[in-house]
Image 1: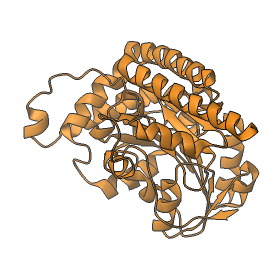
Image 2: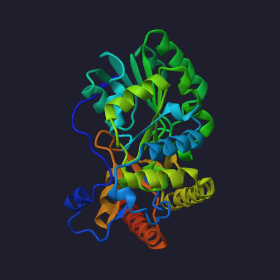
Image 3: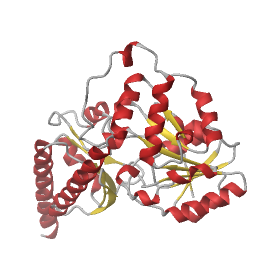
Image 4: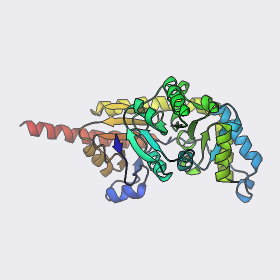
Length: 348
């Protein structure tokens, strides 16, 4: 069990990238996030989405479509929020201060949010250890390695936590591209379960700030009371309603992402970089000289996600166009060539 402390580092910061690689080729190819580089098509917003406060009826439209798309029992089981990040400490505060256990290694903000909510927080690497928690937190599929916990195991854990007044939180930020048969979205009505769903990652609109908590109706009311009126901005309502209802786009995008992730695996494989997991929005890399690869690509203006506490791990998102694919291939070829020369030199 690892106690968690300290600041949280994230991918996606071009300011940090410029500081790390001041002489890098620009523009940066940012592969440090798991955000879809092919966003939902932009469209003209109604002027009232900016000039007027959001209407309650439009929020109801959004929760109805979200319930249908995600498989929640009803709109009464859905809370819309300005991103899932803002939900984390509020969800962690749904139960009294106790022991919060996070199945890791994973997205570090869950541990920070639970600590903000007053819990004693630790990360565990064993699923069975979560039974000892008052608040158990799982990212499913996991970020960054793509690990998936089966639905039946999650429901068994939820039942045990419920019996002692605990709470299970399952972050399904990447379930749009995961095995949806293992989602707990349809099970939240039984209580003591909160499922988090992110809009921005799959739809490639992270800056819009839109996310959802799926849970029992009474807990939905508690969370909505904390947010008050107008929690979700007008533009986010309009994009959420249209994109979540566009099942054709979603199905086509899943197929496209599957092809792109297979292409990325093949590209890494050509240059001796092993892919150890991930989802179709990001790939999980483990290699002894991960730090060297991170630096070599960064100097060429290509950002991967590195992890200070796991120096042998990297995460790579998808290039967004052919120019980015070519830049990645060229940089990998240069790195692999230098790596081979160094290996030959060490044997002489």
